[in-house]
Length: 330
Image 1 (cartoon, rainbow, N blue to C red):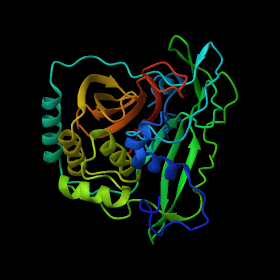
Image 2 (image 1 turned 60 degrees about the vertical axis):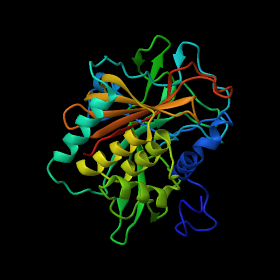
Image 3 (image 1 turned 180 degrees about the vertical axis):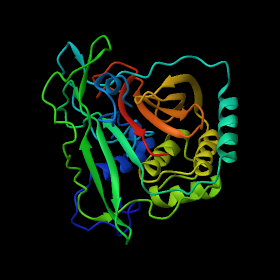
Image 4 (image 1 turned 60 degrees about the horizontal axis):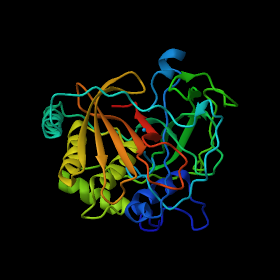
């Protein structure tokens, strides 16, 4: 934790959800053997009609490890009403007649050729994450989160409740099957005190420089695999609306790290057309990340953390979404 946030947090401060998530990302390879998981992610809300909202919801971030999802924080057995699931449905995938290399090459090329845009530190994300306190219910409450920055670089993470919903055992999205906060209600993030974000300086758009930038701020190893790299990239994406060139550099890092495969076309949780990539890890085989690129621009718009099975502390069926993030700006 000290290395991830040197001197920026008061000595007596309690770890925030973002701190825990980042620690999870950093510890992911070691934590996989401990058989635990965690994440922090969200979903859609007020901008859509109820059917529209419900039909979409997605993304780690600060996700969880995500990209990294597999850490040293135990999750108690989940006890939900049998008629309901405690996790969102997976995104429906349609196969593409292309290889992952072809999709990555065309995506990077398209991003590099896009009009030069300035990166902005104004990312907004909707996320949901499986709770780690054993109190899960069938009600899924997505959070809308964004940073409010001050001129001196300090800021506050603001969060409000999105449109809550439940998922039936057969995968249908329905009205909440229990107590839920009203949409728009402020959510305590335990990060209301003014502080610095983790990525105060503008990210570079060169892959080598971007890797060094992420390593300095998150502890990313020089030989990090694709899942670990995705964890760092998703955390960055939570603070910054990255330019196309920066997102292209991020895809190059994922490509070169390996472990990336092509799933196919999807509609994300905000009804946007996308192409889904799977990022997996030999060190953390119980989890994978589903990264969604916009079909047209190829920018990173969403991500899920998926539990693949094999963890005795998770009372969930394989292929359960345990966290998701949907990025709404750029």
